[in-house]
Length: 165
Figure (cartoon, rainbow, N blue to C red):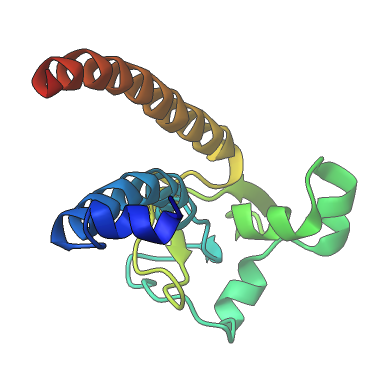
């Protein structure tokens, strides 16, 4: 018996086969969607130090006051163990009463909303000295994903088998 004859005997690709095919494909599409969700939900947008309470928008053209508050490149190279770009994004130069410049870490940040409206990195301030938290949250996300996969896989094997009999 040829395959076409067999297919004709059991009926053609009907509504039931289409529904079953869709359900099988759906179960294979959901895990990658969950994994790729992390790439967008926890993306790190461009950011800079927040200068004042009124400073709420990120702009490509840096304000002159922001340029004055950035640490000098020479200072960053000499005193910091991070890149110059990270030093200038994470630290702010302030003037003390005696006129000397002091470098302080930023307390708040302004994020670029060009590509992402709002991310976990922004919500939880996981930038600069808190980037370790981003890795920890990502690991926790995937551990939960793995435990959930194992748990629901076992449940599916146990209870779907009972339903199919």
